[in-house]
Length: 108
Image (tube, rainbow, N blue to C red; front, side, top):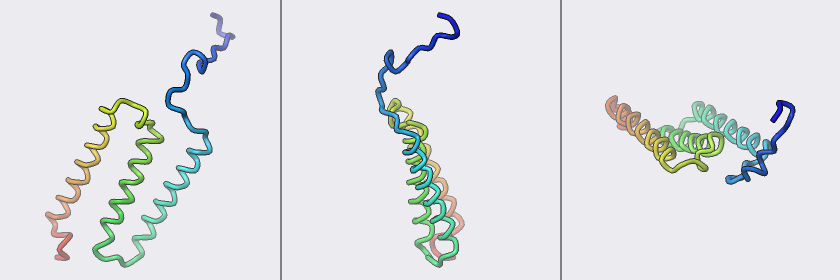
């Protein structure tokens, strides 16, 4: 094969996980930017005890969206998904434990 020949890989390897068009990923990026805007706006609102749980839920939504769609994790081996999700769970648990150490949740 010479360097000028072109191989159509779609015939040799049919798409097994149906990549979305670029417009889909642009819409997802816009949704993530919108969620980030909500997170920034929450800083200026007085939500009391609801502030941290709302931020943690929004963070979880963003993490799962980025990992599953942009990193194509939902098409990979389940072991990789479990590694990412266990890392997320560990990070949240460590963060909450650190906040409990500083008595963040009891208002003290």
